[in-house]
Image (cartoon, rainbow, N blue to C red; front, side, top):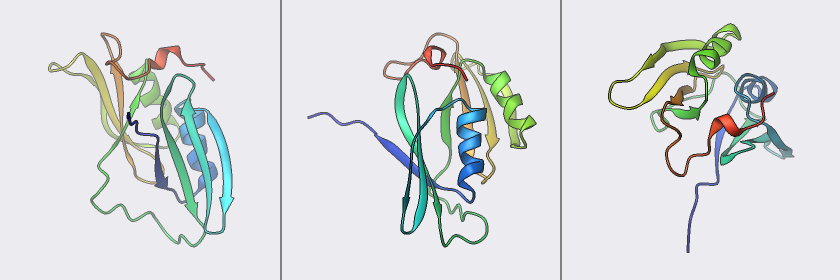
Length: 142
């Protein structure tokens, strides 16, 4: 029996704005939308595969998302860390750290916070993607 991580679901304060971040800025295609009695939901996933991200706007949500301490960060693999970082900043996301090539691993990383304050690590691999990770360079560009 094999297992895979199928999907992560995060709460957002504005579903349309969050779809815009993930789809339009980050290039992750929108796959589906649904409405349940308590929430509006959207699922996004890259053409190359990988885990899906589900965004949920709770209908009774008031004010900002309470982050708590359980979620540290989300990883987003890219084939151009510098360009994606700048695109996110230009769209109003918060910079946490500028793109930097790391000595310990063959990657460039940057950190931003999205519109709801989620910490997102942008990662560009310089020696190909790790085994089991889809190559972001093979996805269809928007």
